Amino acid sequence: MKSGFVAVVGRPNVGKSTLVNTLVGTKVAITSPRPQTTRNTVRGVVTVPDEFQAVFVDTPGLHKPKNALGERLNHVVYGTLSDADCILFLLDATAPIGRGDRLIAARLGEAGSPVIVIVNKTDIASRAQVVAQLTEASKWGFAAYVPTSALTGEGIDPIGHELNALLPEGPLYFPAGMVTDQPESFLTRELIREAFLTKLEQELPHSLTVDVREIEQRPDGTVYVDAALIVERSSQKPIVIGKGGAMLRDCGTRAREELEKLFGERVYLDLRVKVEKDWQRKPELLDRLGFE
Image (cartoon, rainbow, N blue to C red; front, top):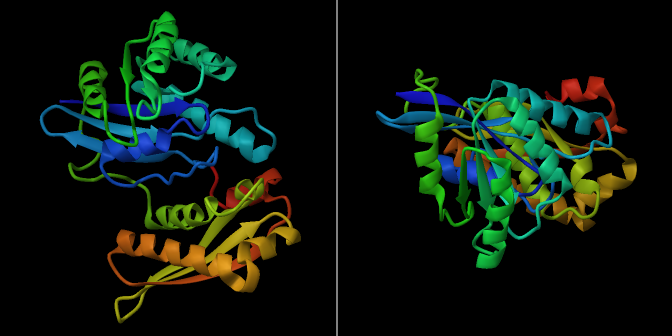
């Protein structure tokens, strides 16, 4: 039996979380068109009986940090690389390989773990774009190269074949059938945040986080969730609430529906909006809000 931890890395918005969800077969990481949607390491587990168990570690996109949160996100990625038995390095097939990709490739070349390059978004890229990406990336000399659409699932099976060849012999880290080790509080926070990400404009998605205060199952079976939406400035609070409460109501309904899928029960979601000035720049607030 082979097993190991597989770091999933790349620039922001290349499809890392979508790929992890597709590999696992269910949602363990939130997705949105916004860069830096992922803010923590998220583990998804795939077990193929008698062959291998891969523990995928979805990481924040590597980027030039602008504040304390950005610095922590990059540290999370680099720490993950040091523990990885194998690395999936995602490239966006629709965009030319850039300086950021080359910097990541150089860092991975020093990591010492086998690297599988995933040329993602083949569903919307031309054949010429995919070939150009594979040709350019092949100069790095990594272990394998796989064109894939994380969104449609095309090219997913070859990733499994490559992992089976590259992972070391090892134990089952998690029971077969377990798909994530994330606690319900973390998944709850992320599903609420996801519901707001696609609706909020400009810089506000990056200024928003969620503090889950309580999750309680009541005698009638309903799951009560008490959560605060945290923004950085007073001027952002009415934007999150929306005219007549429309944004809070609509996104809250979307979040509640996703939470009911998670818990398998009716959910009462108690949401409020709170201002924590410049929370992204304050290490003590980052600690309290659960950022690694």
